Image 1 (cartoon, rainbow, N blue to C red):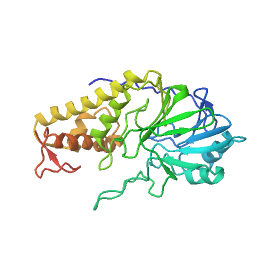
Image 2 (image 1 turned 135 degrees about the horizontal axis):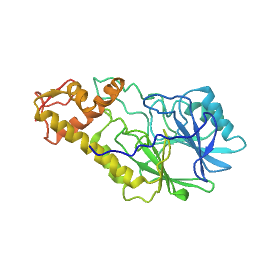
Image 3 (image 1 turned 180 degrees about the vertical axis):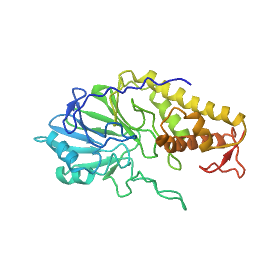
Image 4 (image 1 turned 90 degrees about the horizontal axis):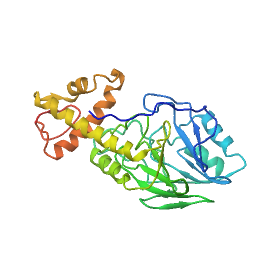
Length: 297
């Protein structure tokens, strides 16, 4: 299967603002995990009058570090890529301390009737101002375009900093790992479309919320797409062997992945299978694609 040139080298100090570009600084929260890499990166755009992107987890040491980083400056905007709990819980504290308005695509998506809310979502979050695809946020010496990129989650935005030709890519494109796409809100068809949406854009630097920046982004996005197509091809190989469940296929297709990540891998596999069932490429007994279904060609 095609490989992604992952970027594991990431130089930072927890709680210290470090320059990424002339306009963008990063403060990394001390919340490392298998899904956040070394931690959540909170970004500061501009100088003097600034925007803060993804306030991060509700950790007082991180909130204090961000406020130290903007001491003597005015926070005019708080921008949020999406509503997972490693990105937004610090937002109320930062908004209260700075008086800045909060901008995002919207609240955390509510689950369909009869389904549990996604564990990783902050259901208490609500922005002051909704951003739609193509909306511009303007500050003192900086201009940011909202780029709607659903897939990882339906309210995901990337932020294009025009002066730096840089894209704050949230969890849509990361250098250290692929994104988990977890139904019902995670949608693989949307994810493919959102990846392809980036290809004609002119940004030369992607800055994800987790991990190091991506300095040659276009080939990287192509590699992401080829990786996902390869995962679909692997599913078809498994099903040519006969009907199988998601755990059975994950055990084979993710044999080199640590066992504690197999559940997340199964969620992304489900996202593939939901789309493949919709397209008629795979079938189930009752026509529904669920985590417990048995799949066949």
